[in-house]
Amino acid sequence: MLRSLMPNVYRCVLTVVAVACVAFAASAQTLSLEERIQQCGGCHGEDGNSKLENIPSLAGQPAFFTLNQLVLMREGVRRVEPMMPFVKDLKDSDIQALAAHFEKLTPQASDEKIDPALVERGAKIAAQRRCASCHLPTLAGQEQMPRLAKQRVDYMIMAMNAYLKDQRQGADTNMTAAIFGLSPNDITALAHYAASR
Ligand code: HEC
Ligand code: HEC
Picture (cartoon, rainbow, N blue to C red):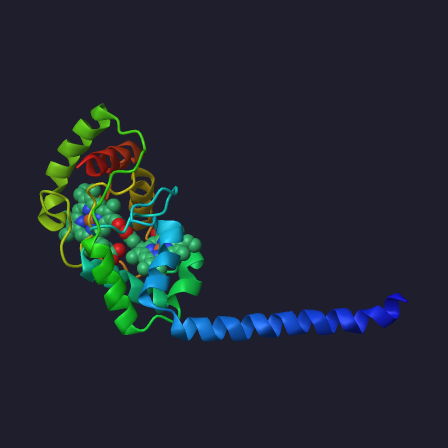
């Protein structure tokens, strides 16, 4: 009884996989910009402001920064496993359109708690380390330099630690130099300061 059922089960599984693959291949080629934006919104927030831990907001990011990062991710240089399925088949024109879209959205602070004492300390370190010389005095970012203002605290701490440990592939070495030698408390203070701007 069991033996005679087995081949049918396998056939069924194979059919389901084949149908799923065909459906995926078709959708990968024909996704509209709107559909792609919706996919991104599942993690980065519908309005480009992330509500999820360690996932950055994209709203108000300089288009050139987003474009750069998406190319690095598509080429597998900056490896972000959860994003691979969403970037691997992006065309240059898709990347340009997505980057332009997110630049136009309004950044909003996350609901993480901001500590005023850390903001004050972070402001001093930022002045010493001249963060504004690249990220602008408003910390809105420019060209390949990302917006830090209203970015998530947890994400910025994670990102700065990745630079310090040389774990962010494809990154500009200027950034590692800018925070070289800072303590974990200094990094946290900088993140609170930047998020509060
Ligand atoms: C499954 C969740 C998920 C989806 C869907 C997703 N992302 Fe991401 N994305 C992430 C995570 C997680 C990171 C942070 C990775 C890291 O640095 O560890 C990230 C980082 C980024 C960054 C880098 C931002 C920065 O400040 O460094 C950009 C740009 C980006 N995503 C754009 C997109 C776009 C555009 C889409 C839609 C095509 C998309 N993402 C879909 C999870 C996702
Ligand atoms: C010489 C220019 C320069 C200076 C000074 C600088 N940065 Fe950056 N920063 C960059 C660039 C370029 C990137 C993007 C690098 C990449 O491709 O990963 C970046 C990325 C970042 C990121 C990652 C954000 C994201 O969305 O992924 C954070 C956080 C950050 N900088 C914080 C700071 C802080 C805080 C300071 C001051 C202590 C600072 N930066 C000083 C150039 C600079």
